[in-house]
Image (cartoon, rainbow, N blue to C red; front, side, top):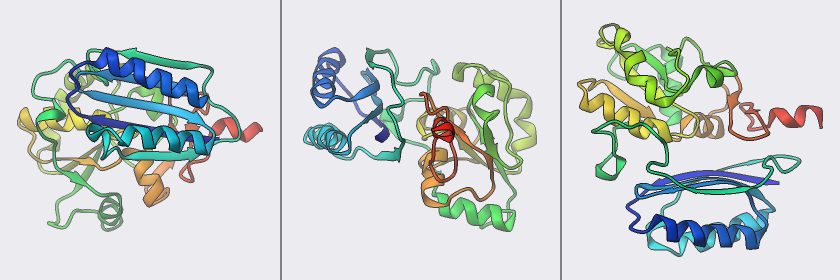
Amino acid sequence: MLNLAAYHFVSIDHPAELAVTLRERAEASGLLGTMLVASEGINLFLAGEDAAIHGFLDAMRDDARFAGLVVKFSHSHRQPFARLKVKVKPEIISFRRDNASPLSGRAPSVEPHTLARWLDQGHDDTGTPVVMLDTRNREEFDYGTFDGALTLPIDNFTDLPDALAPHRDALRQATVVSFCTGGIRCEKAALWMQADGMHNVLQLEGGILGYFEQVGGRHYEGRCFVFDERVALDPELQPLMDDAA
């Protein structure tokens, strides 16, 4: 079973109409999972047969708005979703903060291989210490996170700004690399932090899953929580749910 995770920030004039189209395509292909559609873009988690997944993606990329859609793939021995859900939302990831729209640009990022090198040497290329900032909630980072990462006691992404406030002074002399599962939360969090005066913040390109895909598990302890019945993926992108299969 082929699993995909993808998001794309792009202006969508009629999200409800797009949601109907995506549902029809997914149903016709026998795909299950979750698709969120908003005026700011799309967020996809789907699973199905290889040909069905790739056919769905080909159809999406025929739309110029999604021609550059970047997808992360993984495999599981069985279907990790119970049904297909397609929802129209105000945001594809709820943050509810000003100065955090990726439609107007994105914060600087660091590629996984560069980050791994920085962590190997203990500092970035300017000699500045690197602090990894986990923007996920406590349920997620309990499954695993980067070694020594700053984790925040939050239950919802919208809680991040208040939880980060006590750490701002301690982070001023570091290169802060924010990270999340696949990158979508950091698209907003890093933008907001920069707009709020934290100009030493980068986002990890592709999130943890992108890091696993390119680097593996160096400097990461445990697994990465995912939002389906696989529960969590190890650095080889193998799901926890398959341990007992």
